Length: 460
Image (cartoon, rainbow, N blue to C red):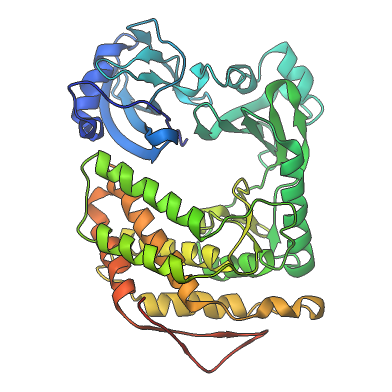
């Protein structure tokens, strides 16, 4: 389960903000505020995620391991947040439910000397429907799910993702039929019309251009009392991730030929704003890197020279985890960020994450020329239909470089704040800086075919 935290408060305590990234410090604070079942102990705490919130705030997710009397580990997540309601209790009884949707639950308590709150998803006072929506054994829940499952009593629920005060994604599985599942997205503000418009654009683009190679979740209904939209689940199968890069390029090539009508525009300025928020967050936690300043200066200069371009249908958060291997090919998921924007945004984002995957595999270096060339080759190898041939127009090399560099920097900053990845991000910072300083030859993209010429992407 992925959980996240939000806060718009400033840490005014004597404890510096960076100490909340110290697992030992956090473990001490959790032991002061959590009452565990008899014989259980908090064995490990790690920083799973840190992210910026509105008005200069910050959120932190802590992944915890709790061992029982027999030494068996139980995993869950607790997060630190602000504006989550007033926590009157100074001690919370932690509930451990290995078969439950969250792993650990029952926490909503003031964090000592922080001005924040430790919380689990089931105690989110701004999303009070999470508790009843995740409990499949109530009479109301069984009555509702009888429309979607043959045996509502066998339904199992687990949390896929969560953003405090904003949304929670729950997966409902038929205990007797593993291929039958429903994914429910619970929102603080349900914008059903916008969701339907986005899904219509996606389905249309993939149906006309992808054939049977890609599938997307379809809207199956709504649970209005819970503020939830229901989607068909995509049955995942365990198989090697071979062919993923080709599937990703197929998905992007088809998606970018769809209509972006009615969607919010996401432009160069928005990308700069997102990147800047991560730079500020890293500075707050005293995690600077020498490459950050020169890379940011390059991004600002480059942005001034990039003019507005045609808006395409873009995913905006596209990387390998958005593709799920299935028995029928690949499932494409997570369209909450769907926008009208530059194709180069999705491609730069995907290339940067492929570089990060290489770093995580332990590769000491990454050939960005070869990596980018492979992605672009595959992207433009997807056939275009006669009526949409104009969509095979060449990419803007400078625009692609801008999005690649900004994503490399953002991903480096994100993982510099996490316990398990902080020691591996130096290469990403170096790659971002090197990409601004070197001339790079990448395959150009002629309309509808692979060109033999190469275009030069020059440092700006």
